[in-house]
Image (cartoon, rainbow, N blue to C red):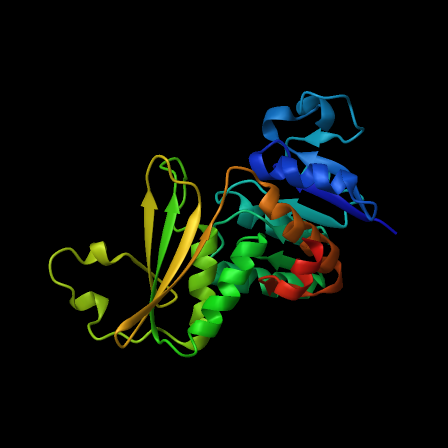
Length: 268
């Protein structure tokens, strides 16, 4: 039996790639889409193609009937409200947008468990970002000092990126990094030390010519380890992981953070 899917943000950069992949997948069915700019149209027509029989709604609440899983690739401004709305409708959620804090996810987990539905929040659904997180978690067991640098174009509306935030919060599982001088004791401009996210200093660069990249730097006695993930121009890198999350989320209750790299590798 097919998993019935709604893609919110289906005319956006990543949402369109994911929606197209759902249509092609034999075990998935795209039954609705959400896009304020294309509301009332057929999704194929909104893409400038032939009609495909998928209605586009202007609001998520209008698109949830007969849906098993909502995939949300909208914005950091709407993701929390959309997730709660879908849960309250009894629909599982794959969170593709950034902007959810650890506290947000804790609150969403409580709501999801009460509703007996699942939420998959990966932070970044690419294979490379998944491996970055797993490698960083391994390194944090041995190198106890680290910081994160987050790169993006000057037009990215939020900071830090979802990948950097997720990485910092996952690293917190190993406790905060050790420091010789507390950030609060920094002379001059303390804000130059970056934002403290779950105990980790995160520095967000927003400049022209940058694509998305996340770098975690570990420091030891007379040595450094740098683990870096870079994204290209297309959204294809997010597709395999998102499809894996769509297929997996109906089988869980509550919030699941991160992807299983072994399972994701089988999808790539």
